[in-house]
Image (cartoon, rainbow, N blue to C red; front, side, top):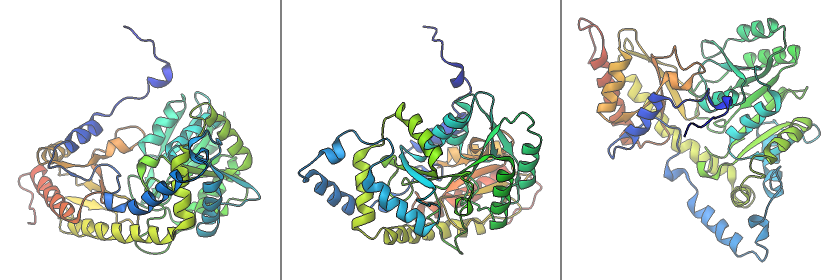
Length: 409
């Protein structure tokens, strides 16, 4: 059958490098630094089991088994709004509203749906989350990459793009300012202020994606862009995937009330509402337990693994590999030296069952970042990190193009 699919899907193609990583993960002895998964010990199993049991013992089961409000369940919206206001100062009940979405990626999908016509443009960091790129492309919009300058997006290039946009095609600026994916870096406060002022100057909305923001391991938190938004220009997106469990498919959006109204309309034609059961599980964790203590336990768990990966990287010859040390999140990004063949390096890791995500996968144009790769440190054990980093060191030595290059052992 010759199916006639819509043009909007013609831009979406499976990535062969990501497929290779997925197949490699199927090997029983694989050490995976590939995907951003939490480990099983991160899940609050006992608390969730008690909450679930209590829900089924309620006299009125419709509270979580019946159809619900597209905006989200009030039992979750209320404590979540309070936390966003008190912990991160990204919610003002006078001007903002809050909605629950089915995973934070749905929030980006609904935002593109609401703001972009075919041919409109979304400015994005050149290296970024592939799901956000696909959300843009699936509506016939254009994902325009902005080069990175050091550890963050080149603010001058953002302003240049907007200044030259004489047709008003640029509708959104998509950013992951805190513990960026795939780089792991965080945008300095001065750049956050600068990019907000640029957005205000040109009247363009910023989508601030913050799924990793709770996971700070070093230093002090940097204020979110949304925290100094006085014009209703920032859409703040967060997720329970990294702090509760990915299968909950719980994300949330905080934005001005007119924006939330439009996103609710967009969601009603997609899935009506987000899973009621998991909304109440999350709500009860926030109201009946010490949720901040749970977050602290995740920071302690991941900090130990983060430090183990940094220790492994420090053992590698910097002439073969460089990296930027993040201060939190799920990932860090490394770069191969010019003398290291990326094909041989990746082939060696596949043969030795170590999974990584090559740089081109996590980029707008899927090219130009052959020398980069992303490492996840939250899912593997300390022992797997130590073993896997040693294999990466061996792969680097194997893949050096020039046999005359001196390599420290």
